Each structure stands twice: as C-alpha cells, then as structure tokens.
Length: 443
Image (cartoon, rainbow, N blue to C red):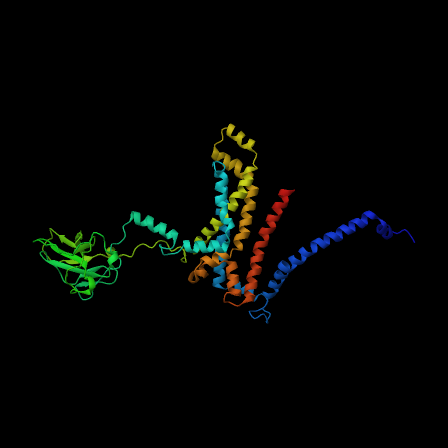
C-alpha cells in the first residue's frame, strides 16, 4: 500500500488526538447550539416570516405591516416614548452612577451605602412596578408621594375651611356648588343677616365652633351669623338659627357694592360677623369660593402628562445601583499617582474630575451607557404595571405596544411580529458595539 498523506494522517497519533478533541468539543457545544437555535434563531426567523402575513396568518401581505407601523398613531406614540426612554434614562443613570461612585469614595460607610443603593436590583420589575404604582396613587391617604406633596403644600398654604359646605335651597343664598354664594336681597347698614349652610359633617366641624349667635349690626354696620343650618336629630326650622346649631368659625364674608368688595370680615367662633363704618346704600353679602375650595390632592403622577417621567423615575430607582457599582469598579482601577500628581500641581478637585477622572473612566461610562440603552429598549414590566388603563397608550413603548397588538386585545400577530423585528434591529447595533468594546478592552 502506498504511503499517501491520508494514510500518514490516519496513523499520526497527534492528528488523531486533535480530531478526538474536535469531536469532543462539538459534543459539548452541540446542546448549547441546539438550545440557542431553538430559543433565539428559530423565534427570530419565525417572527420575520410571520411579519409578512396578515393578522390571520393566511394571506401574504409583504411589507404592509411595516408600513402600518409608521401610519398607526398609537405605534408612533410608542416610538416617541421609546426615544424619550433611550435619551433620558441611560443619560440620567450614567450621570447618577458617576456622581454616587465619586461621592461614595469619600463616605466612611461606603460599603453599606453601596449595598443600600444596589438592593433594588434584587427586586423584580413586577414587584418594583407594584411598589411604585402604590407610591404614585392620587389619593394622599394611599400614595406616599402625594402624601408628602400635600403635607408640604398645606404647611405653606391654608386649606379651605369648609370644602363640602353648600347653601340650603330657597333660604336666601344663591350660587352654584363650590361657591361663591351671595344673598339674593340687598342689605342696608343697620340690618342683620343669617347665612345658613349645610353639608358639613359633624367630625369636620372646627373644634372651637360654638353655638350660633348673631352679631348686633350697629347703626353704620351690617351684622349677622354664618352657621350650620342643621340641628342634631334633624329638628329645627330651615333658615332660622335653632338651639343646638353651631356657627362656622373662620368663614370669610364680603360686603359687595356695585360689583366691588367694600369690606371683608371673618366669622368668629359662634359664627357671628359684623361690618362697621359702611356708607349708606345697598350691599350684597357674599361667601367667596375660597371658603369652599376642594382640598389640594397633590400631583397626578399617572396622568397623561407625567406618566412616562414617573415610570422612568421607577426605572432609575432600580438601576442606579447597577450603574454606581460598575462605575465605582472603574474608578477604583484609576491610577492614584495620576490624581496625586495633579493635586501636587495645584489642580482643584473639579479640574481633576473633569480632566482626569472622567476621561480615564470614558470606556467604563460608554459600556454602562450602551448596556442601559439596550435595556431600556426592551423595558416592558414597569410600563405595563404602573400605567393605569386609561393612560396606557400614553405610556406605551415598543415592547408594550408589541405585546398589546399581538396578545393584549389586538390579535394582530402580523403587526406584532413586525414590531418585534423593528425592536430587534434597533437593539442589535448597540449589542454589536458593546461586544466590540469588550473585545478591545480584553485584547
């Protein structure tokens, strides 16, 4: 038998060992390749193919679904929101992470501080969404953020005394719900007027309220009483001060003449009030609307205008620790001799930060920023859970829009698949950029 190269290879122990190693490597890698194909490659190929068919999946429509993406107002709104997320969230997170990483170097309990900031990463997006959905509640009694906002507001601005009070019908006061209320008949100096209101619950009455009593007008004044025209047990005569009825202290009363406020006074503990020094003529007594203004309810965090910033705020809470830890690791790797040399040359801490620290951290900052860009493009849980149903469309991003179109009532998996392909095409360049950065840093 001739001594051919093939025969020599077959008898070469080294080559046989190499072939065995290759076969062993293939045997180990094959399960991962099969899993990757089943979970990644096949869904991508199937989604692209499905995007070329209509909602039923029976009729080929070509690029019609991709055309529908740029024609659907709801989808365009989702693209706009996704753009806001990509621009705002990674920028804020990278900046916050950098600031906190630098500050923690100067904190004595830096490890504990980092641990506290990193803890939200252990909370799932579903749990974080539920937490912030409750925190953003409009009712100050349930939403912690509005409880704080209302508390601060009420500290600097007094709330209306009687937001639920209203005039009793056909008893001399005219006006719509919420005020102002005015006397229907003109009043002259020397007269006394009773202004009866209803709608104030017993537990809402001021603690200093006393039994209603009218003030004497005097010759050049107008006196009267503003009171709760409701006696305990429902007894009494409407429009008349009865025993057991209490005054409404703190109620502002105005004397109006010719459309202008001539005088203003405030009811005392028994509801009595008096205007003095009035010129002769006819006046109208008015209870201004400020007496009946609804209490401040805080900020509508989940309204159409603020829902996207509110959800981004929840995202920042979860991911700030991630950015801080990664940037802190890069900061720890910076040569300290460069910083000390700059200090010895007279550079201020601000100059060191801007001209040395940030440039040396640029590779780390870039990786953190791009990683966050990839992450926010896929954000779904927070948007879906935090945004209430009526404003869901205002908060939608591409991922939530894709799910709603496909499974959340739209039942158009052709359009949903097209959205998934668009989302993939947007994410892939950022992933490639990040992979190349990792390879260059490892080289």
